[in-house]
Length: 336
Image 1 (tube, rainbow, N blue to C red):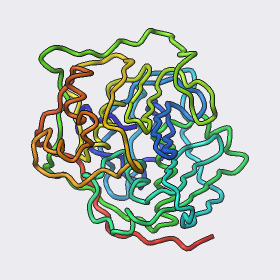
Image 2 (cartoon, one colour):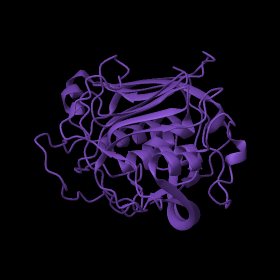
Image 3 (spheres, rainbow, N blue to C red):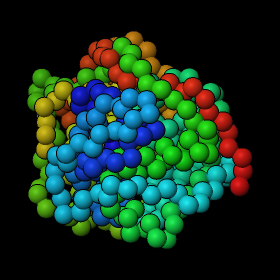
Image 4 (tube, rainbow, N blue to C red):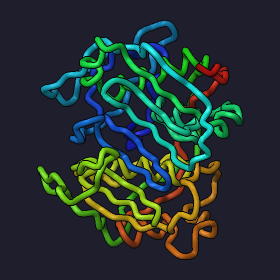
């Protein structure tokens, strides 16, 4: 998950194969009306994210920055490629959307291509331009596996490196070609409200034995967020960057962290109950924070009101220069 506490350039899908920064690995699951953010493909220990390096010049490989947090398990320099990849139109008619990394590959179920692009580049919908309408409407089932000899290597990949694998898949199977620009866009600044933050500092080493469970039914531990059908977002031991990412997705506008909060937190945020599938973020505009309140379910608070009343945080409308991913070419893949 990219950290938008400071707007910066994104990592392009071409080049950038030797990234050694330790980023938090995660999988995303949207099953029915549940949205879960899990730190790590198997282990769920969260690590601090960092701002990505500038994109390399065309035809040049990205420089490998020094790792800001040395760990016992340093990601390998070589990023494996998917040996096989099945991509088919989803015909289930299900509301569920699922994107996740396993120990031997990547899978997506009932997923729009635009959502996969968003995750691969670590940007929000408002930072993607030139996407054909079908990238939002067509849903795909993807099952990509690495060679058996690369399974051990894949377990140690950083999240950035895993994203590079998706980028290569998009280039190969969807003929995706992009370039980056910088554009002044409307954003929300997340700040601490007048009464102060109401977030609860996580206890160091807390394993949350009675907390949230992952897709495998096991307790997730620290670094997990879950959004259920009743509109309740529950987080355990997560940094503010996780909340920022969720708010960006829910408002359809990039949220910039200006809280100054640097710890990991436990919190619950109650939003209006959902009456259908989780919506894709809507188009952005210049309306002030709270302008979408009328569109929210009257049975619960708007996301802006809930943030202030329950977490002591506030979204303020601003503008900021952001990297923009411009899609130059993309094709629907042939079935296989």
